[in-house]
Length: 538
Image (cartoon, rainbow, N blue to C red; front, side):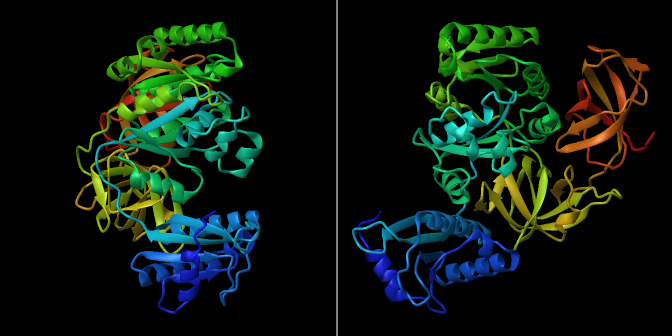
């Protein structure tokens, strides 16, 4: 609690004024204030207060409209602040600071708070932002590891820090992730900048604003039924590195091998974190590390145990053939300092070369803003006001759109570059028209969509043989589409490399030579590289 009530007294003395920056709120609740019209009205009110205060507004919580101190119970106060944080995000702003007091001086009962809200600032657009994709078998501690890393909090032994990433109620109830989730932390003057609660958008926005280097995590899905979502996360993002988790109490599994195969197919420099080392004896950890090393050698990789060779060696040697291994525990925080040291020094691998390009991963509607397309920038940069092309639509056309605004981890930016996960608000299209797999390109580009391309593929697993007419799902960039294969030699066996023609069954997409993809159908899996785009459909 803040002992100095001067800020509160000053805000109360100023009072609510038509053209002022101070607003009184007795309470905000999910049941009343998150409904569409009400929420939109409150966001518009906050924008007005920010404009009146030259980008700064003071919200006094626990106070009636006439300035009487009513106070709130702790749970009601927390709910009010959560909704205020959502309103700030909707208004392109963030809560910079909150001071709280009790209704009666010297007592904390009946909370009153003053929230200082500021308009979003720009994020430096340097090259010190790396993107890490996490993978691993269900219950191998992947989300818990990331939650502990970005917050600095020890886990409670039951996956408590996972709550910072598994934000959907059914995921929290079952302890399983069912979609991609994101985490972020950073470094300033060589020291970690962590978030107190990553589920609060304002906390994540503050890290983006203050850190000199950012590390963003794309936390994928470990459960077998959602392997398609995992592939989407690892293939559809412009990742710099991969982080594969293997639990010390379980060891490598079939899913571990599948996820490793996707990471290596994308030629992604990867680390392996052996998690939950606090649950087993030291000789069991040694046994699991040996199993991981053997698995890596079987697929042509060189394991590099960091405990033996050190952080310097891991940073110097990590590439698409050398895989560092680190022992970790989210409960004791063993290995967290090692991961901090690695991530603080790892260079970015994605470059800004080429014209702007982004494949849409998801879309959503923001009240007062409009349609937003989210994804990872593949190349170039984009700025507010830029004119772009979006498509292809079902008929193969592209549409002219304009960038209204850009957000990165809920922090508004004027410009974003390759490797950043962003949400781009677009003018000229409805949210319902934006589909995953579409591309955003410069307005002066001349994209040619296709439904057919030639590729070189390798069959990783298949029960028999792949013949003409084989129909897997192809994952290319953020595209996940059923396709028909036409092997040039008539068939392909497991382990074979060969040339095929691939034809999307339903929709044209923007495909280019050199792009890598994963295909999957049941137990069958493989990887490929686009060699030539065809004009005709077979």
